[in-house]
Length: 295
Ligand SMILES: NC(=O)C1=CN([C@@H]2O[C@H](COP(=O)(O)OP(=O)(O)OC[C@H]3O[C@@H](n4cnc5c(N)ncnc54)[C@H](O)[C@@H]3O)[C@@H](O)[C@H]2O)C=CC1
Ligand SMILES: O=C(O)C(=O)Cc1ccc(O)cc1
Image 1 (cartoon, rainbow, N blue to C red):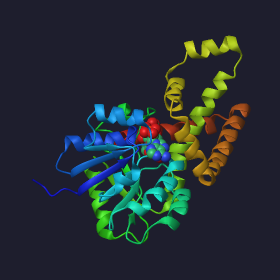
Image 2 (image 1 turned 90 degrees about the horizontal axis):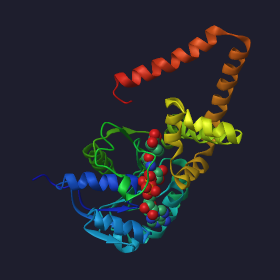
Image 3 (image 1 turned 30 degrees about the vertical axis):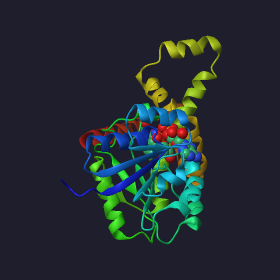
């Protein structure tokens, strides 16, 4: 019997990410002794009960955090700081506060003024997910071989950072510790811009003339289908991500627009070399991802 990493873990917002963490913990009962689960939506709590994902399941967030050694916020980015502020007075001294939010800087800036000295704030963003939401969408292997990016508050004790890193390793993830702004720039490039492009391209197809629109959907080849999978993601979650990472996102979008314009120019001018170079670069990136088993 190993020592548990946390005596009591509280998960607030047991949707896709939160319920995946809970499922993994149910498969490995020694890691955490007691699971407290909270959400503001009673329908979500009913599903969590039916799925048996918590030992205590409640809509009372203050009560939920009272005994927790670690509180994990799995709510949309825009709700992280308000929820953290509301529950802060109810934390046990020495507890860890973590969140799985997809963006960092604006959340850290909004939350830090409300952070108690005796609470360690260590955001941990798993680079894993799907286009689905809610407690029924989660699965225990979601984080297997995926990165989890930790951006600890400068005052967080090293022992707490090590403990949370060990927790995410048990979830199956690989750990990288990084600076808040670096996190946002990387995520803008590898996650937020691709989603923006997917939402936009589906919008473009949808605004075609009515007769052509039916054909777009009938004849959609796998390229367009891949975009529609990403574009099926949750609107609230992605609104929050775009608005909370606007600087980094607009900066990579600007770069992308310039590159797209360069590609348009190459096509217009019949510049075969630029066209082939651009496509070959994409192919190289895909192959290197496959070699690292990340695709
Ligand atoms: N979906 C994905 O692929 C990934 C999402 N993330 C991040 O994880 C977080 C959660 O995402 P999902 O699990 O996809 O969301 P989800 O929509 O599946 O679940 C969110 C849950 O939070 C609850 N909630 C919302 N506002 C609340 C509030 N004020 N108080 C209490 N509960 C509240 C909702 O009722 C819902 O049960 C987000 O911050 C997202 O950016 C991170 C990695 C991947
Ligand atoms: O479904 C996909 O393709 C994703 O990219 C999931 C995802 C969404 C948001 C994140 O912050 C991290 C991963």
